[in-house]
Image (cartoon, rainbow over all chains, first blue to last red; front, side):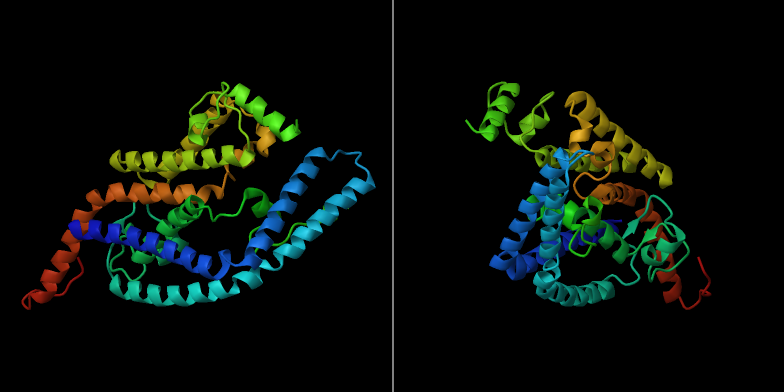
Length: 188
Length: 153
């Protein structure tokens, strides 16, 4: 009983540490660079501008007004295209670190039931939640599933607490760094 | 006087003539918000707090299965709806509509669910842990006993 509890606490702690590590690496390689700061400021400025323009646009808005919106959207698209380039270094570094770390943790927790789920997961998730575990009791939880759940809840909260999460306007317009850019066509 | 400073004075007047911190405004009925993002942040953190509290309660209850998760989602949405429509009385359209406030507030529902499930399962470990440990202890003892046949538990 105490072993499983200790495993759970340890995995939550690992999740917090890896989230902080990922943000730390990203801060060193990306967030503190002038290029990223300029890019982020530009996207946020244009996004806020676009939000204000969208609020005032009406059905009978003139071509001039719509053209201005298209210009703003194009500027955002152009800035967003640079995000992957700027974050490339940190993505490689994080990928490399996490591959090594996950390999290590998987071998440590291999075959160990680290928690009991209060539900039976869907069949396509059981491969993850019951990974490398003995028996047919699918409420037994493996390390990787608990880690994913912890990361899902903890990482974004840590980003928000540290003030590293992008603003809502920027996220909405940019669609996330890997998402498709906003469509200018609907304003033309 | 610029329009932004005039607006700030109006907001202060609604808030009782004093500059309030974000959480003071969150606990104040019908507070006026300087920035939309500020209010959305408050809603986001309230969701996290609800997830933590309900996760622990569900684990202690215990409320198992997807029914528990579904009830959590409904309760989460209901509490938030009461908060921003009755307590804060904000205009939903100003914040992108009901869908945005309930589902898309600051980084989606899944983060809240993740926190809820984490606390939910943590409270369940006590009930399940002893059963699991017994099963694996018996298996280890059987394997180490040369006289015992190797059969599945």
